[in-house]
Image 1: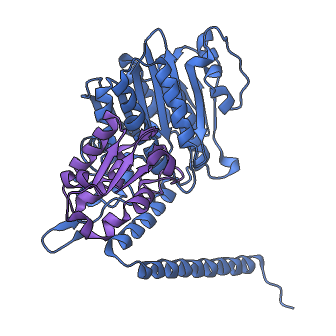
Image 2: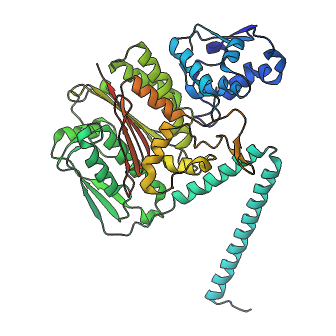
Image 3: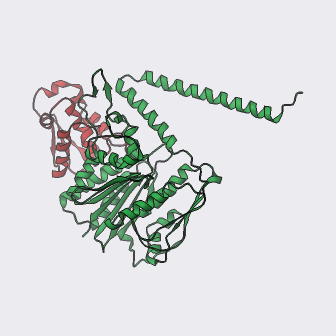
Length: 111
Length: 384
């Protein structure tokens, strides 16, 4: 189980969904490819309920709903929100940012 | 040596031009079908066709107008803007008078104007930009001009907010009446990568004056500003114009911050109707329904984005790519504005929707002519 400091290892402003917003940098598609690729490619990781990855949101300034949707709600294509939250864990995250993630998971992946 | 007549030479030139045009067309078609063959999945092919369809539509939207009618005059008096409820109808009627003008010149008479709000400033600058995008030739560029107001505060404000700088006009203002720390001046952003800087600038400005608790503060920064800026930077750009606008003004007497973010894009109706999810929309695409399209975009999960999910038609039904539904950026903005008790509105081409601080739609409709040359988000944020 690895712990990723999102602000330092990715970016403190998580706003762009894909390359079409602004200059497309630090977008959710890149985030998902960088940190969650194994969860996409290897279904064996989903056979248990152990946490696969922990995201540390210390110093993360902004988490936009579109980013959260593309990065995390993407997995609702195959799994339920509870299952996703058991595999992807969050620490040092504010109430509003956690609410953003849960809201996107409950509404499902939307493009 | 046989000398060709002038008409013969012109005919030859025309034939050569038509031949070149045909070759270019064939070349473009070849490239297009080659690209289609390269794409593997049904959904990526659909998205590519969608992009081409949208580009063609944008070209036709910015088609050249003929500004050949008699000079027109528009009179603006009293208070002009949508920040106060009582001025909304007058603003919409006035805007519909001149946004779609087709005269050789347009004179905006502000002699009797007593107050001009940020929403009016954005309307005027976006109109000027729209005309620049659409003019046929340099010799057919219509003139838009205005005089001064009899009210000194109006003239001072036009200088202070950056409007005179934008239209290249000299002006000065009284610093005591309009301190610089109460405004983010009208700015037009052209560069990709400018969104982040403006996001933080706007948030810091609003945070210093707004009456928010901690959660509202974070919702405003994360949901409202992020989604609006994503929208203008994605949907508000075209092959001709990549710009978007912003202005923010703190009004201590009215205890509000007026924030306007706008683009000169194709509007919400056209975004939805040229997007991949247009088959799911059952509203007739006409100007009178612009307001309904805006309301639809805020209520339901629907997206005009090129990369939005497409449905694959089957014999009895159609299906989306597995697990995907439809976009909900505007729905998030609506939800967050309700929680932050923000009165806000969207004006997009002919349509408009106004929301009260409890999130209810107070006013929804459309004029027969455009009320804004693009899409504008206007927020009234409660101030300390």
